[in-house]
Image (cartoon, rainbow, N blue to C red; front, side):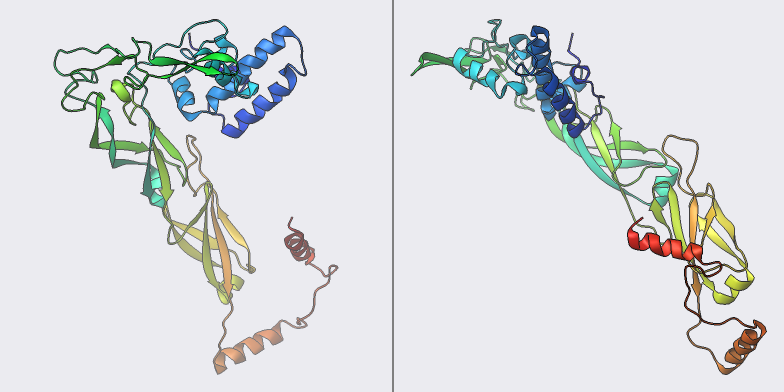
Amino acid sequence: MARDYYALLGVARNATDQEIKRAYRKLARELHPDVNPDPGAQERFREVSSAYEVLTDPEKRRIVDLGGDPLESGGGMGGGFSGAGFGGLGDVFEAFFGGMGASGGQRKPRGRVQPGADSLLRTRLSLQECAVGVTKHLTVDTAVLCDLCQGAGTNGNSKPVRCETCGGAGEVQTVQRSFLGQVMTSRPCPTCRGAGETIPDPCRKCGGDGRVRSRREIAAPIPAGVASGMRVRLAAQGEVGPGGGPAGDLYVEIVEQPHDTFVRDGDDLHCTIRVPMVDAALGATVVIDTILDGPVELTIPAGTQPGEVSVLRGHGMPKLRANSRGDLIAHLDIVIPSKLDGKQTDLLRKYKGLRGNERTEVLTAQSEHNSGLFARLRASFSGR
C-alpha cells in the first residue's frame, strides 16, 4: 500500500511548496538526531525527510497523487537514508554500494509504463462568460495512446524481451578503484533506460513509445463565477505517459478580458456614473445594463455629494460554487459645469442669493458636519 506522504508531514493534499517546506522545517527542528536522541524520533525524522523529498519533486508528487509510491522501488524509507534531511547521504550509499539500501535490497527496474504529465492551456473569457459559465471548445495538442499498438509499443504479436545488457535489472554496475578500495557504482542501463526490457520489433506508428502526438478537440465546462488566474481541472485529459501510462490532467487557466463598463473586484462589480450637478442636488434615476439581470434602475437621492457610492445588493458576480452573488457598486461622479452662458450665470447668482449666508471657507476639524471628511483625509495620509 502506498504511503501517505501528506499525512507524514501533516499537510493537505493541495498544500503549496511553501506550506510543505514550513511543515518539514517544524518537524525537523523537533526530530533531528542532534536535538532528539530518541530512536523513535530518529525513525520519524527519516520518514518526514523522505516525505519532504517526494512532495518537493513535481514528478514524484504527481506519482503520489496518482496513488503510487515513487520510492517503492528506490530504497525509499525502507533504506533509511534517502531523505533530503540527511544532506544527500542516500546518494553516497548509492555511489559506494551500487543502489543498496540498509536492507541490502537491489533497485527494481522502473518499467516501461509511466504516468503522463499534466498539461496547461489558457483561454480568454469575457466578463459575461465568467458570470454565466460556458462550455469552451478547445484545441489541444498532447500525447495520446497509440491506436495501432494500444500502448504496448510492439509490432503485431511481438513481445518485449528482457534487456541483455542489464539482465532485466534496469541498471548496470561498475567497479572502480579509489582511496577507499574497490567502489561499486550503479546507474540506469543505457540500453533499456532503466525499464529492464527492450522491444526488438517496435510499433511502426509510435516507434515503441506506446503514444503519439495528436491534435484534438475537447469540451471544457467552465463554471459560473470563475476569474482570471483560476484553473479548471479536466481529469485524464493531459499527456498519456510512456508505454501507454495513465494520462495526466489538463488544466484550463482563465484569462478574463476587460469590460467596457464594469471593473471586477472579487465578486463585486464597480462602475462610474456621471451625475450632473443639478441631478445630484434634485435627485435622479439612471438605468444600468447589468451583466446578469439586464436593465436595472438606480435611484440617485437628492443632495448626493461628490465621491459617494450607491450599492445594488446582489447584482454583482456569482460566487463560485455558492448560491449567492456579489454587489454592484456605482461610484457617483458629480459634474460641475466649466462654462456657463449669461442666463445660466444669472440664475446661479439668484440661487446663491436664496441660500443666504453660505460662503467659501477653510474647514477645521471642529467644523460642523465635517468630522467624516477629516477622518477620511487622515486615513488616506496615514495609509489606514
